[in-house]
Image 1 (cartoon, rainbow, N blue to C red):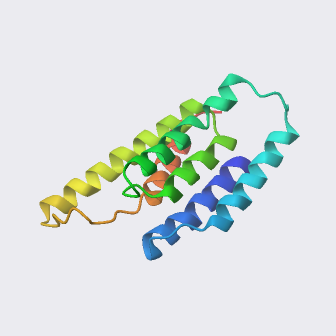
Image 2 (cartoon, rainbow, N blue to C red):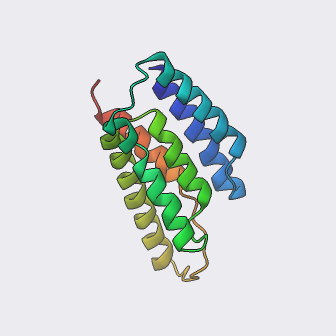
Length: 141
């Protein structure tokens, strides 16, 4: 419950920042990562391959940001990387996939409305928030 509330506050704040200012707060990422590390330290300190794999989607997004020379925001990758402290790989993959599908639908709608500028920036964190909320509604714990 606390983990979910922490993620909702973190994603909600950064979704608002990303939507309004097209920026992501590095301070909030560091703070949420610190809190996530404390939650992790409160449990078992054994690093298993499953816990390490939870950071792969974020690492993939950071690599994607590097390869596209910033077309994908580095802050988006840092947020998905930070989510690895709070969620296992299957949940992060589901949230990330839902966010990608939501962004694709939104992009398609913008395209059909005539916004065909290849340099159009679309904030990604609101879609991560939507994917997380959708996941909360579906997951049973």
